[in-house]
Image (cartoon, rainbow over all chains, first blue to last red; front, side):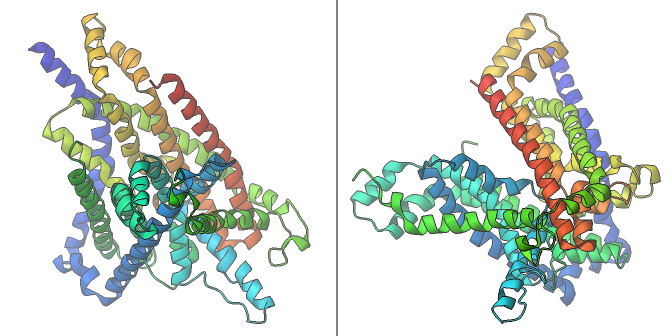
Length: 272
Length: 266
């Protein structure tokens, strides 16, 4: 009896420091953030849907993140499958080079785009020397999309390489013997086996893209995304209630997507 | 028949090669741009280290600040995260599950929102606001779930329950059991968690940009500042310093983690 009580007590004590820190430094501040728009009236919460400017920014972010996720998943799966089945000299080095950008802050990736597609960029010099004038693509939607692709791909490559290494080769062999085309093998042998990775990785890529701030900040893009809108409202206009309201909307979207993905993978994998 | 069709797929090879070029090309261009006299004239303008020295003069302190912050963040997540992971792994109560879910929220919602919330509540405490402690709080909140999740999964191993019970019957008190038996048993997971926390803290920008002050600048904050206000060669040289300082540190830690996992893993 006393022993049970004391083990429960010890478990509580173990969690206490983290719980206090979390309550003081996250729960309390976020509760204040969530309550902030009330002062300006309940309609402030729905500003992201009712004001056409903020709605446009939300839609921009959604489309950009969706496109990024789609292309990342396709390219990441292709590279992952290739790297999982080929053993060549320098493969490990290549893999660590391809995943190294996971540690890059978003600002560096924005800078890469400026270096290549900006006003002084390599691409502009190239088109200039071809007599086409200095063409830039860094500051619009294309530049943002390429940058988002850049910071999403390493995660996808790492996940898909690991997943493809544990794929069952017999399934594919059987399909091949039965005369399946490449497309059929992709659809019937690869796709189902990589589905859990696609759901988990796709959700993380989407949520990261939605919340990414550093990249768009460096590019000071003409294509406005929601994190930049929030930052401008807060810093340039001191519109704290609006910034809070937009943050809540953004947080709901990213959390919702991640939550949905976890439900889906729990369904597919009831053992967990 | 031995070779499956897909072994030699030109489409996969082409895709992989293009992705490699896309990922590695910009790094090479950036390194080169930091070492030439003039980026638009390229290598023909001659190689120089003067941009690197200029960056070191202006932003050198950010390197130490970022490394120190990352180490402090690792220590904090160890001290509060590892016991918490144990508590969560052993608790079956609903409250513990809810707490586990809540801990994940700072990762699921954008860092910008967390930073705004912190400023809202603690922004007026000037001495905190102007110290690195403010950034540290943000980093710990953001990285804690990575440590807790990784280590908690390791604590759930079935054989560990039996060992813990055996040591208890031998009369070891909780501190002895925890530090002498449990922590060594999950050491590979702890090291993996430390590596993750260190990597995330070094590169963190979304929170840090909101939380920093002119006197508390980290490497990514300095990078953003140089990109906005300095010539392109200086930004490149700064990026080069980031790569030269951070990447070997990360690779060394990764090698260490693999070594420990081999040594302790069953």
